[in-house]
Length: 213
Image (cartoon, rainbow, N blue to C red; front, side, top):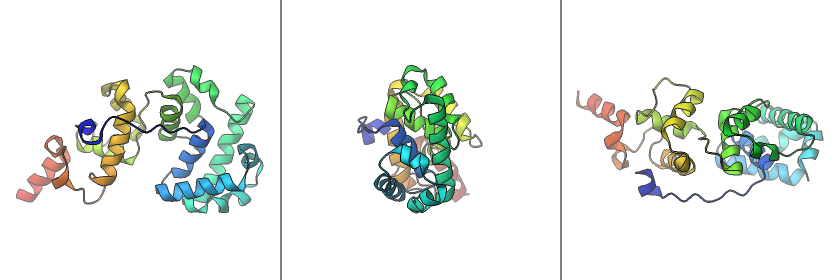
């Protein structure tokens, strides 16, 4: 039904894996517009990620102020870049292309400040690995639909969802659930009356019962 409503074609995101990693770190708990502003500021201030790695945190942090907790993110960015440099000898992630998805995920989440969602985004969009990023929209909607338990963590939710979603559908599923979450199945005041999934939705059924009792 998601494909019927939103389509199955997802625009390709042609980004270097390090760019995608840093962009996703900046996006943590931050609106897209602020993430993009911080990323552009970072790319304008430094000519390479090597320069970012060599920059003092107190110089880096104000540049990404629009990203929210900018001091924390400056620390995470420098730590992740430093760990990549130490392990690989260069700021590149091409080695992930030769790993299976589980090993690639383990490698990325071992970096400071990189969780499963951030790692999944890099693997899905840069390496076309069928790994579902469980962001707040995916987590919320799949719980409301009863696909995963209501009390489950995001990490466990990813494993359950990966078992039931065909690999070929992961990218469109991620894209469509995020779009549905932003437009219809919002965290507060979801537009259930406009939702084409409401007949399958446990959350909607429970709300109707409450309203009628």
